Length: 174
Image 1 (cartoon, one colour):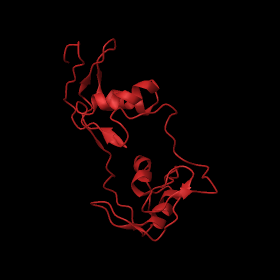
Image 2: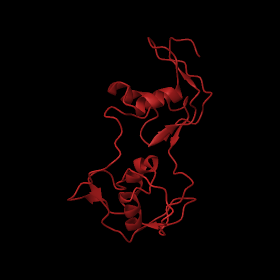
Image 3: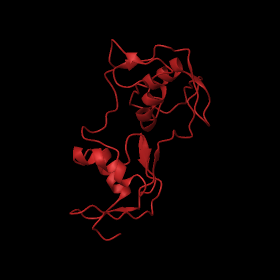
Image 4: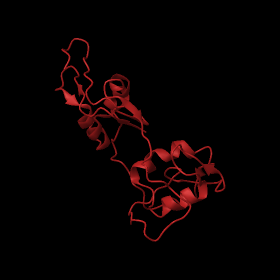
């Protein structure tokens, strides 16, 4: 997905109070924005809120699983809900991260070793490479965003300009 990189930028829409991009992003992730706003907001606020692709954290996913790993309660279906890896030997690489087999990536997800924020964007990155297909057994535990959650920057993007000012036609810039 995408995320806001300019959380302090102010967005103003006619008939609505001005709001910081970061607050708008939080409200979208919590499912507090009307669904129709999730459809048009990304194109309107992308530049102002500096929406960028979400990047994985600096913590690498490795083939060597250690017993010292922190306990994570949420399983992660790396292919997406109801799907599984069908090419476990394919090698996934991401700049700045060690290469890892799709099978190991899936195992790490099942063991809760992949942070929830990374789990959200992995399916679109590995679907073709890892040959993700619908599984027969759907995992019972899966982190799920609120029903009406949306990214104000659009799927796979984030705000990168916290100081940007957006002016909607007919409204004064803020």
